[in-house]
Image (tube, helix red, strand yellow):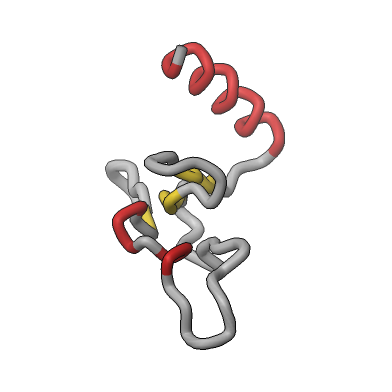
Length: 76
């Protein structure tokens, strides 16, 4: 992709995956296995807190540290 920036988002906290039971019990953990190579991130409902979300990102360590710093600054 030459021009522009692509962002891929997968999942939704509205899927309520931790409430789904196919007969062998509810999920203990849930995540997106593969989404894309272009700056992907995913949103899922939190397994630990009602109304919370899990955010998954695929970046190298340096970018992850930067993401965490900016995220903590903006969320507080």
